Image 1 (tube, rainbow, N blue to C red):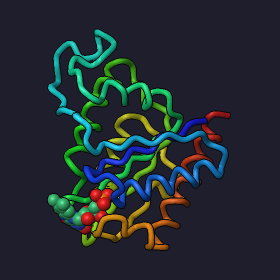
Image 2: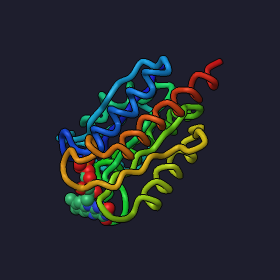
Image 3: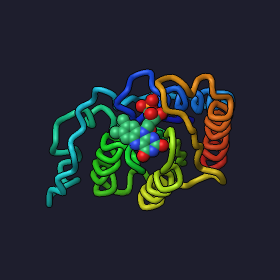
Length: 186
Ligand SMILES: Cc1cc2nc3c(=O)[nH]c(=O)nc-3n(C[C@H](O)[C@H](O)[C@H](O)COP(=O)(O)O)c2cc1C
């Protein structure tokens, strides 16, 4: 059983990355194999809604999503984390979500996967950001555990590491996601 963690922060070693890693530790403790993907420095263009989308069995845009699609399809569960930028997810995260249009056009490839969400910000916007990510997941047919999210109230780079509350919440999310993924598979 595999859990994929995706950080939508443009900052390497940022808080989102720290918390996704901690969630993956929680998933590992429940017996999952884990993989981490950072969107920092990646070239992920916006979806262009091509009328033939899905027919070629691959995205018509050739960028870093080419390597991310198979990881998403292989995973039993996906945890997506994002910093909050002006009250919502980063543009990098949104580009990734929109580009999964391909996977729905290829036959609902994300349906039945377990989902989890991490929202990180120094001030406000956690609720809306989480709601938007969870809405994406339900539209794509994900199954969500009770308490499918973890929130973190930190700003400076790496501050999450010393914030016990954030670390605990992320780890517990990873455990919940992995536990449900095991149940879904059996
Ligand atoms: C452009 C920009 C907009 C931001 N807007 C918000 C916001 O609306 N609410 C908030 O709580 N934090 C906001 N922040 C702070 C980041 O969410 C915060 O620093 C977060 O910890 C960054 O995560 P990272 O370390 O994974 O990149 C903003 C930061 C930037 C650069």
